[in-house]
Each structure stands twice: as C-alpha cells, then as structure tokens.
Length: 247
Image: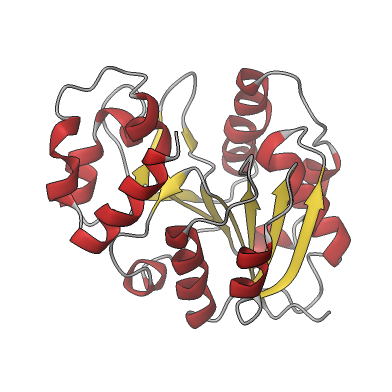
C-alpha cells in the first residue's frame, strides 16, 4: 500500500452498507484530480456492490466500530496508513454527510491554494471554525508538530456536541493560534449553519453540495426546501431522491 502525495480519506456510514451513487461519483472526481483514496466505514462495512465499484477508485477500504464518528475514523485511517509520510503533500478529510458534488470539483480544488487548512464552508456557531465535512490540509500543517499532537489527542466522545467543540472547532482554533492560515472557499457572514440556513445562496455561488441532514430532517425549519430539485442538475436530483426514499 503506497499512498501518493495527495490523500483523501472518506468517513462512510450507512446502516445497510450502501455506498451512494453520488458518493461514488465524489470519489471518482477526487481520484481524477490526483487523490489516492481511502474509505473507512463506521459500523456496517461497504456492501459487495460498493466494494466492486470502489475497486478502481480506492486504494484502501477499512472498517471500524461505529464510535467516535468522523474524527476517530480519520485518526484510525491515518494511523493505519502511516500518514503523514515524508512525501505526503495534502490530506483531504471528508465524510458522506453531504449529497453531491452537484458541480465539478476540479475547478474548486484548484482554488484551494495559499492556506494551510481549507474548508468548503465556515461557521461562527459557538466559535469560528471550518466545517468538518470537508477539510483540506496542506504541507505546512500536516508536517507541523501541531498536526500530530492534535490527532494523538483524538478519542471517541459520547456526544456529537463534544466532538464539534473539541475537534471540529478545536482544529481550526489551534491552526489559527499557531500562526497558520485557515480559510473557507465559501465564507459565511451570517449567524448559524450556512449549509442549512443558506443552502440556496451557497448553490447559487457555485457551492457543490447539499447537506443530507437538511433534506432528510430539515432541523432548522427551512421554508423553501420544496424548491431544491430545481437548484441542482436533474441527474443529481434523481440520485438524491432515490436515497431519500430509503428513509
């Protein structure tokens, strides 16, 4: 197993072991952009169809107990793969909590230069931070002592709120405190969670995802969700609707 200089690690969770078609397309776009890909499943392993589909895309397929959500999954994968290695240039940490991409990723990835840590979106909830469904770490950060110290301290926590505070917010805050740079490709200037509260404005700005929680649960009571199908390409809408029918 020989990860290349750019590595993407997907934290996957599905109670039935399904690898969604939009997630597979996401990984294929990252593979085409030069990322070596590892998939780590929390709980139920990826099913046979997903394994077959990943054969030409993923370099590693791992499974772990469903504890500690994405940060613990990423930590386990990096330890198993011996990352970062001396030749590692970038590490992309992602999860499958978003639908998409609904637009090509290549041009967006090309814009992510000049910062040590990139996110797609940021949030000011509780404290400023990059949202952790997409975190792209560059060489100055991943080869800094800060990176190893942070991941050595990641342990499974019993509540999501604790994970957000200690790890999602904590990583961005530690990067900034160390004099490194953290930026969002789609910075958010309003209170709240932009992937929920400003989903339409994000899409209109060229943002490539829709939060799965938004369409499945609408936790913030958004009133314009009946328009989401018209805001994304028809084939992407069909993929999303197929997944929503499962619930």
